[in-house]
Image (tube, rainbow, N blue to C red; front, side):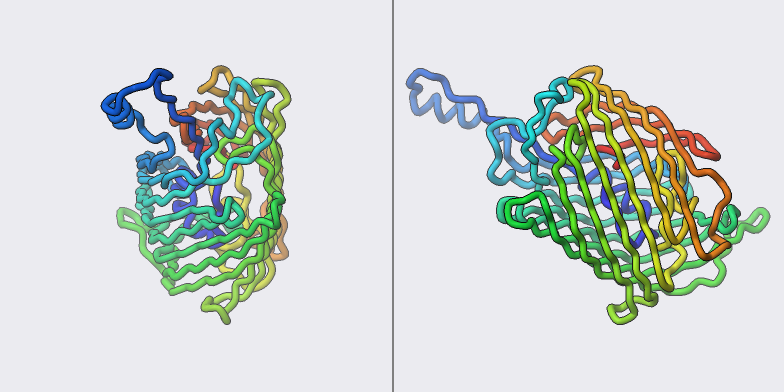
Length: 392
């Protein structure tokens, strides 16, 4: 899943979850008959045989069930560009043969997607994203630009306060592979130009915006990553290590000056030919004068975005996936988070946990796209989620 540092655009992140972190797979073409066909037969055969590595357009419906922004619908129209240097065999394991999964890594596909979405609390977003890899997967690029009108809630001493953010955002990340290793060095750019207002609901009236102000948040990042996962949409084995250091500064066009550091560790282990164990740990910290929507929060299924924020946030989660059939799987997951802050008003006394169950179905075989439903229980409510790809 992509996580943009300008976290105000929660909806943009959720929509792109269904379109960007996909991994393409190609199959070899069927051979021509062994006998000596005539030119006419060859011509007819070539017309009937489709190139499996051709460009494809996939419409991906987005079902939004994030409690922070309400339920909603969206659509991502994704074009998978023609595969470059496609292998003759599958590069990732099928669910029924995880034990024999290849240790080779499938590079991300080249794709371009447009998206739009709307939710029940009048949150709306739209934009375009692109992902590409160059020089035999030694350079990876991902970028997105979008417009959004977000209505959500943040909490002070566990009390909710509604707000609205409306404007433009842009994000890009470029990673460079170190020689032929699994290490990557990267740079990132994040820019937000929006207006912010707090909302008060009056009896029998629509919400009223108070203290609307214009905000700009601009940041640059240095990144270090190590990735041995066999594929990105539904890993069966391998690890991901990511370390990012962001600097937001008035000198690069923003209104705020602060640092944001993020650490992410994912690990996948095939303990049985049909069972995969996934482990996750994430830590975020912030220092300086940051806007309220940029303060890190707990990200667990079952807990709304922005619900538990702090200057230091840690999350640990475990997930087990059992493959019932080649295209069907069930999962169970549980996690816990912790927040701490030097600012008492955003601190919380609650124990932050979540757990749940889910199911998955491989809807597109060639692109290894899985969809499913998760039902999760947090410390306050039960929430459900439509997932495209892995939740992490």
